[in-house]
Length: 116
Image (cartoon, rainbow, N blue to C red; front, side):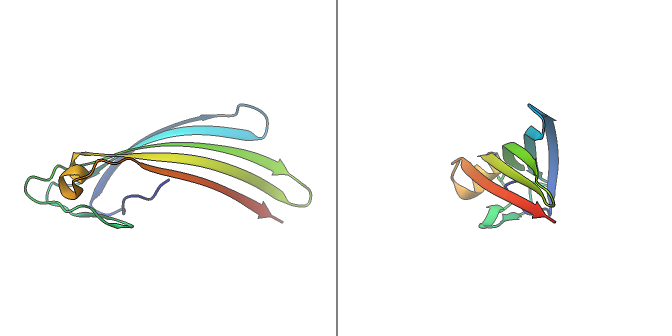
C-alpha cells in the first residue's frame, strides 16, 4: 500500500484478512514483510536507497501493517466508493544498518471513485 520499496531485488510475503462489517462496506487488515534477495543487493525506494546492501548490511528491510475501510455508495446512474487507509512501516535491520535510523513511517489516505 505505501509503495515504500521498489519491486526489484526484493523478496516479499504478505497476509491479509478482511470482512464486511455491514452491507456495502469492507474492512481489511494486512501485513507485509520485505527483504532484499541477497545481503549485497541495494534496494531503492521513492526517497533514495532504503538499503545500500554490501558487507555488514542485513537483508531484512522491514514490515508494513495496513488497515483500510471502504464504503460502496450505489447512486444511480453512478457507482461510487469512498476509501480510508492507514499504513505503518517498521524498518528492519537492513534499513537501520544503511540509514542509521529506525523511525516508523506512517501513511494516511482518503480516496474516492465515481463511475458512470
